[in-house]
Image 1 (cartoon, rainbow, N blue to C red):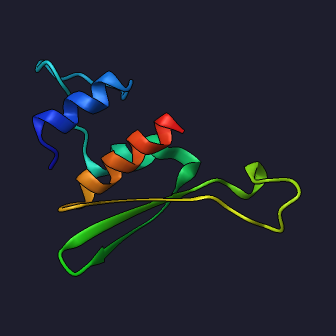
Image 2 (cartoon, rainbow, N blue to C red):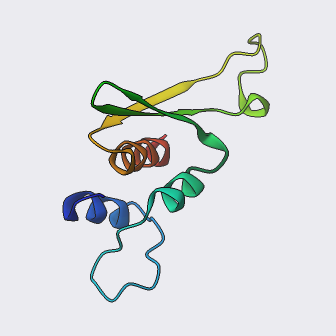
Length: 93
């Protein structure tokens, strides 16, 4: 679960807010992964930390590079936090 501060950051960055009555929406893991779209790559747990990875799709990589991809990584204490931070990073990019 994400906290109020992270939910507010998502809202301010343009994350869809759903039908919540509250002032911010707390998306679930599936919603956050879907929001990352084709940029989501994988989610892993390393010890007690969750790692969320994103990457540029092959069709959007450097045309002069040999199948190179840009990889993005964020971490959090649970999968929702890691993916939310990844979504924020991808949104800035």
